[in-house]
View 1 (cartoon, rainbow, N blue to C red):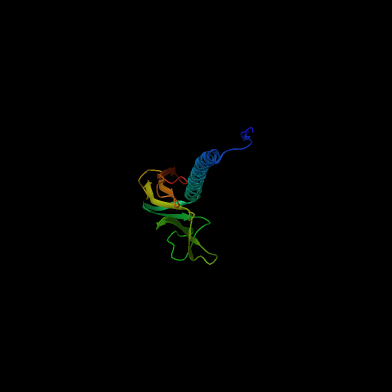
View 2 (view 1 turned 120 degrees about the vertical axis):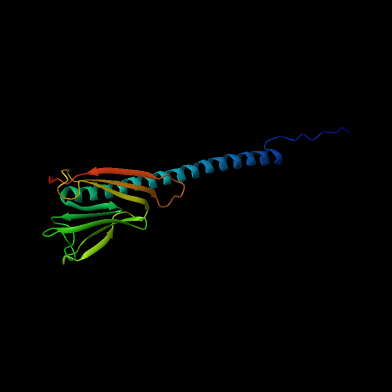
Length: 183
């Protein structure tokens, strides 16, 4: 009798080879998912920062336009009062023939007090809810009569996106003069 050895044909993988392959696959997928989630988080932070920059620039431009079209009544610290020919409120306004506009910092939002159709003061936020304003500063020059200086106000805003606590704050600054020359 002859003993025949059974020959095992190796057409597949052993259990150990399958386990090692699956472990490597899981590690690679975990690394890819981690990188992908990091990129998504980074993109969201960049979008938040860009929205904050856009909203802060819009707010500065709106205030600057009002200053250019009106006259500065007072600019002290975080409050700017303007006499404006067409925008603003008349009830309780000391601008004579003009209308009053006021810009202030309330909480973490920049507020504009203008007027409704009846001339009553109406306050609305200029900054979006996803932007936190930490500082609003108005520094006036030449405000008043007889000092020989053209009116000018320097507006400074320190802002940061509301959604992120770790993002650095950005400072925006602009100097604006009314178009009417009153020396």
